[in-house]
Length: 119
Image (tube, rainbow, N blue to C red; front, top):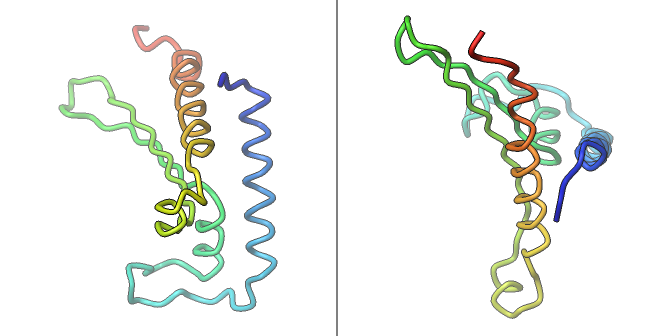
């Protein structure tokens, strides 16, 4: 399944709508608390994270003379009932196909986004 710029824009639009819907249900926007690894986060952060993608991009330098090594991590969560998967009532193929399509799209366009690193 090929993925295009329009497909990525649509995915991001759907993600924004999901975050908006999740935030509409948040009654308490206060801190999430110090327990459970949520230090520094608010309940709204947790609601948005649960509805969307987590994205991190890092430039790391193995040595001060080395060029940066760039990495991109994208994490998304989906609730899955193992019992329903076992009974054949829930299929993950569509979700995994979409993950593959997004990954391929990112790889195909990485050179354009990174620019000429040899200069």
